[in-house]
Length: 246
Image (cartoon, rainbow, N blue to C red; front, side):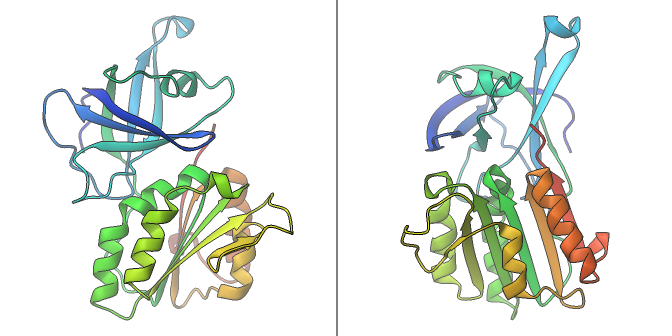
């Protein structure tokens, strides 16, 4: 783990949805960022509003190892958010202080029958980073993997092409998107559903003796999903959680 801040510069930015911006950074020192998929980095800003004390904001790494030489992040726009206002309008070439990687929302050496990854909005970014590691496990075992993304509308769904490409290549990977605010008349694809991510538990029927569940994103979703899983007999060790607090 690297704790000393380093300087990064923005080399590319694009909108993933109306309120999510995908950013690509490179380190000014030319070194790669060694990280484990699922970890995050932190930006550092001095702030006059806090008497010069440093402000930090953290974001999961979206980079897919082996497919990107950049530090890729997905940033959700937060109204009046300190970091959001800066990063959503950050120009190409701008330089910032960053540190990391940090975090324990990573794959572990274990052999469950099924891994269930649940996310809302940008909480899906660490799962995107895990795709090569997950596909390697699918190639060498009878593991089943379910990735569920919850958003309000179809336009808000992030990285669908990446997940669908892996799902097409590996039949053991089931990718689902849940829409909480789309009208009933909207036609849905086979991987699309209405409702909230935790609604999928009824069909999936998670079992603590065979499944490990990852939850990442909105705190309300995580609390609701964790309660449902506890009622099914899951322990805290069987449910890995990372809350995105605005």
